[in-house]
Image (tube, rainbow, N blue to C red; front, side, top):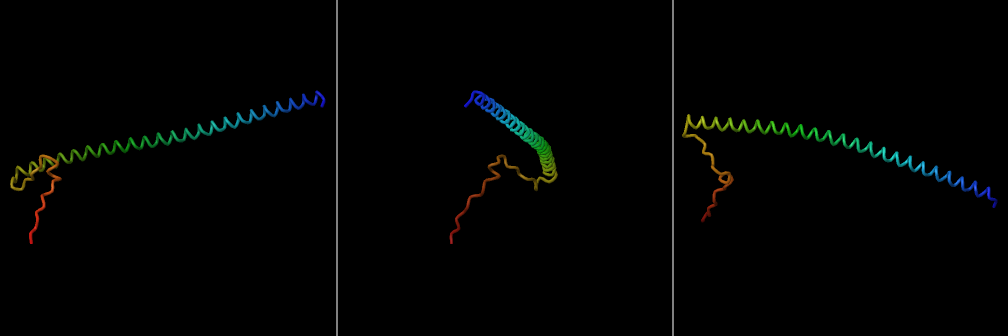
Length: 110
C-alpha cells in the first residue's frame, strides 16, 4: 500500500478514537448527572422524613408531659379523697414488684 493510504487510515483511526473518547466522556457525565439528581431526590426525602420524625417526637413529648401531669393530678385527687374518707383510701405499693406479684397458689385436697 502507498504511504498516503497509511496516513489516511491513521487519521481515520485517530478520529474514531477521539469520537469514542468524547462519547464515553459524555456518557460518563450523563451518568454522573443522573446519579447526582437521584442523590438530590434521596436527600430531599431523607430531610422530609427527618422533619416528620422530629415533629412526631415533639408531639409524643407533649403527650407524655400531659400524661405525667394528668397522673400527678389524679394522685393529688386520690390523696385528697383519702383525707376525706380514709376507710376507702387506696394503698399504693411501695415497690413495683408488689404490683406484679401474684399470690401463691394453694393446693386443693379432695
